[in-house]
Image 1 (cartoon, rainbow, N blue to C red):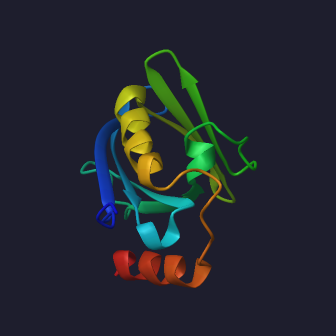
Image 2 (cartoon, one colour):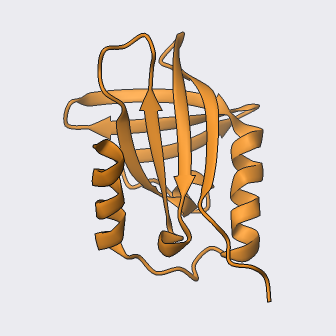
Length: 130
């Protein structure tokens, strides 16, 4: 069989809104194959990093967004639309690296075969936030 897949990480330079640079880190853990955590951070902003837990299928545009998070590819850019109680934001990142990264994960963890383990997801988010 194939060796077990380890955690996967993708770091990209994104754009928040019209022109604000932002770092976008995608993380995927095999224990929670249905989810991707996306961390948005900026060296320029005093705010702490913002962590979103999103559906891998929605990120890959294989399922529609649920209102709070949508992914929409337009040409060479992937637009991530975020709706939270504090407001709305759109962050764009280069589309191809995300597509390639998701395809590599899907090769060992096909869409729709995973199960959610929300407790370990929440544990990890709180650990990463410390």
